[in-house]
Image (cartoon, rainbow, N blue to C red; front, side, top):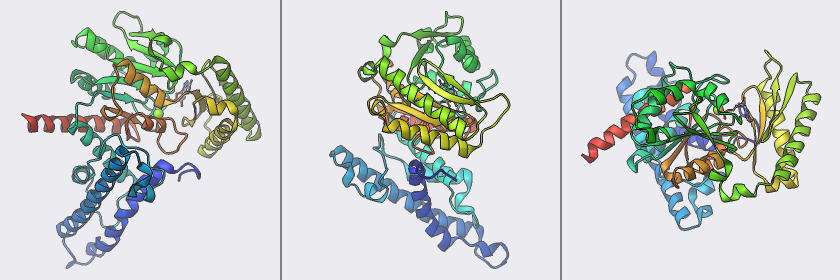
Length: 412
Ligand code: IMP
Ligand code: MG
């Protein structure tokens, strides 16, 4: 279930799911499981596969038409915009037809007689379509990752045996730059070392040239603190001073505005904690304010969402909220309001690495369900993949490697 008012991104997946429901209803053969002379599994699957594939080809064409309108400066006139009004701009086409075949071979979607193509099927097909396009029009120059739920389980860290480490090293060896764009906001390198030690130690130990090792940066507090890999630092990360990486627009974020916005957010959080009788601790930082539960407690999802929606609305209605970008989100068992958001974090990574384009950048994250979820904003700066857990991140990185191999064989 998604919270009302915040279903926009999910709606695009729901739209595709709705298109696939028709051939499923018309052509799936559920009675064949008890009627011995019913249609064979292979016949039903190949019928369904052909029809699903046609739909993905059609959606791919509709996306291409939208891209043409974007290029002409009139995205609002595209058919896709009429069908799915909240649709954003596309940085690349989506290889939806081929992505469907790829995922169907793994998930046996067209073999199913009782369970129609699901939200997760479509989400994973969209991810595959995105990485197929990126690899085909490669090279993929920058991959940014969220932290919690994407690289490690919520609130945990990258330990020595986390399989994602080897896959990130593989990306670095083939020349991609890496950004960890996390909401976790700390001023000291040591706190990030605690969370990323498995990855940082592995980079340190790898025979990669020193210069390539520096192709990993951490953007903490969404867009507030930048650290770069440094083999000579105790924590393997070195703080990069703000004046070295802030974008022009970010330099205009006035300290007085930051304080004012956080004061308003803090007052709203305090109010909700009181009204909803939450056992919460208020955490105020230099660039964020949040609520975390008393040790051992768990807030329910609805309370967390309510808290986010209230603080977001109050900030949106305030003058300072019009001047200063912010991100209010539900972190699973906490709520935070950060100054800036992940679109600024990704833009900063692109700039630090010499001006990488959105069409050459992929952000991988878990928070896309709603407008206030923190990875959602990255979609403004680059292409994105929506994963549900760290295992899916690993699978996505394996897909990239496999597609890359195919692509290289094709070009040899
Ligand atoms: P992410 O999934 O990597 O973006 O991390 C989000 C989580 O980081 C939140 O749910 C919090 O538990 C934690 N966190 C720690 N410090 C901060 C902060 O300053 N702002 C936002 N989140 C923070
Ligand atoms: Mg996350």
